Length: 241
Image 1 (tube, rainbow, N blue to C red):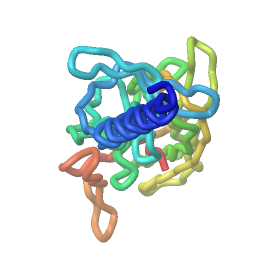
Image 2: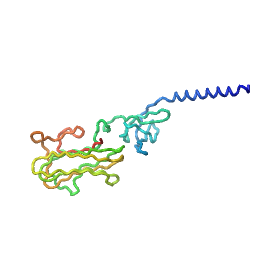
Image 3: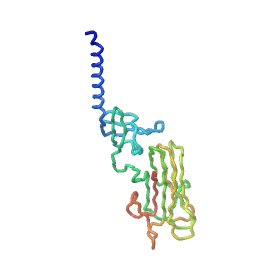
Image 4: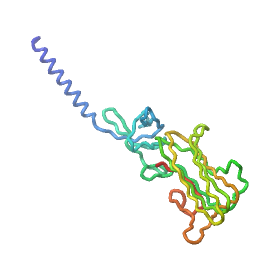
């Protein structure tokens, strides 16, 4: 019997090994689960997210490039294989930003027309909003205004973090000598990932009037499907490119 022990041990070891391989193969399938995003991080140049899945928590789960605009509160799809998880999709909901649609991160419009008055020297704050960038982004800042008079009109985008200015984009119209100017400035600015408090401010110097009517010919007020459905004399927006 003792002479057979090495062979018996070898056979038992082989059976154990095959059993482990078969079990591993059974567990090697990919599982799909829904999860809720709790937080998004940039760790060493890799974007990860903390998730709630079936009442439990997963931390620092990596994501594919299709999910780099993931936001806290989003519902996503997590794929797990061989005990490794990755976020592969984001469930669409109203307001979700997707690269294909380039939905603006911030919009503003005004139907008011007339002569600006009692404006402080620091300008008139039109809107304040916090935007969140989950990756280094190139932002397109756009503004439009229908103005007349001989003065100048201005619009500025101010980007701050914890009260510290990180970027500033400003536009000033050329001086006019009568007539209506359909003024449409734009500029791009690059910002790293993070949250930014954005303030949109308007200014005027000298004789300026906001024109709120359509004139003859091709001088029409603007309609932007992402912002408004009725013609407006002024609007502004920020879009991630």
